[in-house]
Image (cartoon, rainbow, N blue to C red):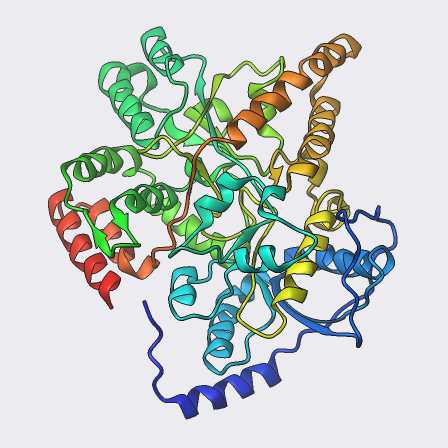
Length: 480
């Protein structure tokens, strides 16, 4: 896990070449956005400081808006050194950032985007954000929802700060046999393992009629990507703090035995989809929703509202939040952002930590009403994600649910009905926000399991062999 500091001279030379070759830069800041600023007075600086940020293209607009907020509303100017990269250049820029860390030239802030977070933390590259919160006169830990922050903790500290957080919810196909639907309806929360067991029973007992249905679809990566499901469940058996793993446990092997038949037919297709997506951006599966047994949605869209309001949606029933083996709600981040969050900020251990933290609060405010639709085809008002700030929660969810109602209501009477349901809907999300949470993505390197998982899904190795080889690799990785 720790970086090997070898060939230092070569690395420094490479870093200089990369930095020279890959320019950052800023662009004109939009003028058509509402100013939103956190409570409190801005910290004043004797000279205009420079803040360097490393981020995916998706965040260019909102970062520039945060600069505008800081200048016009907060009264403080900064010089922004912004390095932006496109999805197609993601892997190259992750490598570049790693080289910058090794050369002692890290940016002041970056947006999490598939980075090896655990390795960064263990190498001492990142600042504990709790220290920044405690040192800032304008913020306290009580300002933020504690459960998602607790889920993000590593090695006793907070090294990644989510701008928002959200959950995945599972629905069940309304055309399935009543015994299957009745079993699902008993869940107040559900694990992916339970859904796979239910799917296996459906195929065994009703395969002649429903064998054409796939396991799941939807907007959540827990519904569309077997790799995410595997990575997420695998994390339940790894104790990062104590550097131990238990991947030969009978319960994990039982999970593998259900995982294989559930995803075998679509393995090659889905794996090629995954590799294409990493290189080329986010995709959505195109099959009609009713061709899946489960419909699993995330909070990155307004989809959770389908389970909270009376709508004309007929194909799927109920709305059950997905949890891990310990009953903790599964939240983002996932493999590459944005997922269930608007963005996750990391602050390297540079001399600009407090400035980066101050800027992150402007960034959080800027996410509340960005006009993304014109640029990215995405209406952020429709997002069901909760802001990490308690003060922003009710206004944000009100806007989100109003937009949901606007897009889904068929007439004035349904609009009135759905608006009457809004207080209860917001209260339900508020209740979930206080539940224990865990991450969907455990930040285990893909190289640990990629080839073994492929061999297992192709029938080359058994579940027992897979588990044993995986246990050996992870155990060695944990102690390196």
